[in-house]
Length: 597
Image (cartoon, rainbow, N blue to C red; front, side, top):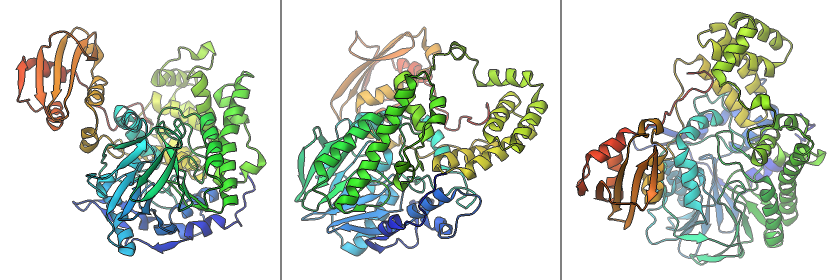
């Protein structure tokens, strides 16, 4: 670890600045009494870092655990520490504009309630989604029903929210259990945050579609008398994202493009690879556009930065960080190095290495470099030995056979543990577990290795992955999935095309090879009409010949039909619908990760 400036208390001063009040107690419950958020559980972070936690990550966790309502500048407030993300409230002429209403409706309602307790019962007069991740829109119905008020988002918001949270949502939700350490005990030995915040709330995810799209940098919108100047930043931290300035308040919102850590070029839960080059260039543009017009910069996570010189230094470090990772990875790619080789060789410049806001608490240099490699060259490193390898279980069985069986593999791994090479011990023990899932000593030793790797990690998501893997190895069943991002409310907000695409990816191709059928879907409440045709195992959306079945139904009825309810208004053979539904696979919310099954 670099010689980090632990004596520097600037971040703690900024994280405390403008404090108004905490939510007491810091526990938020659903309507049925279930706990969906508990910031009080992290009070142990007030102590000194124990041996079971990296001191740098512990410091970051202490900062993220600060909870309550904070004044950012005149008329701008943030609620922090009541979900993974921040909710910002900007006061207008009649009420308050909500920026990023958290993940859960329950947390968003509690955050708005805390604000109103201290600033009056101001109505919500507008909503802004900074980008297309669920922790920035999911709580919207906790603050408004969306009637007669603007909801502003970057162009492409709905398309990308669907692609990330619906199409691959089940797999991402399962992996998010590891990334955020959801089943881990909140303790010095277990979950201490994720670097970007504490964890994800476990409440109700909702979505109201935007009413105003931001389509160009420089676009000006006025909401409740407040002028807002936008900068589009697509392909940065999210495929659809934007920064914006409140010129009269001299306050700059950086969305999630510049936070107090190195972010992810590819998040460990899975997503489209982000463009580190574009990310850096947009931050340079932010500095040029707004640097002289802002006295405070705040983001959708962490704490604000005050002062024009301080904002410039912060943005410069973030800009240079992503540019350096991008450019140096490509330099070494063109010298013939693979992603893992580059990850081992690359070093940050000393000035960035010792800058707190550039530390890898959420993203890491290691996995970000591999993501840049993946963006340009994909999964294959060019070595033909890696072109057609056996899948994990078959490969593991062969490795273990070569090593002399599971007992011999565990014995060899134990020697690597004793020598301090936990990384290779994990590789050997993983092979042993995949080759012989019931081998008790292999699972015990791998649990030990994952625990040690996790508790030594500076990166919050690495810690959570390792420790959750250790926990799942000792559990009698899979530890489940994360928040339901494809909730009924989210699905209701989607277009018919998006809903049918979500159906198409559930078709079991081999079962459907010899099936042909067509259905017209006519949504009477939205006026949308589409035809689906099943052909060669693929569900094709668009025009076609005469349909075997024509359905007239509302969007809620459409969702009910997918869940097995018989439709009412129809023409043709209802057996066609039964045949289609019988060909759909359900996602597995608890698929195996650290064991073969």
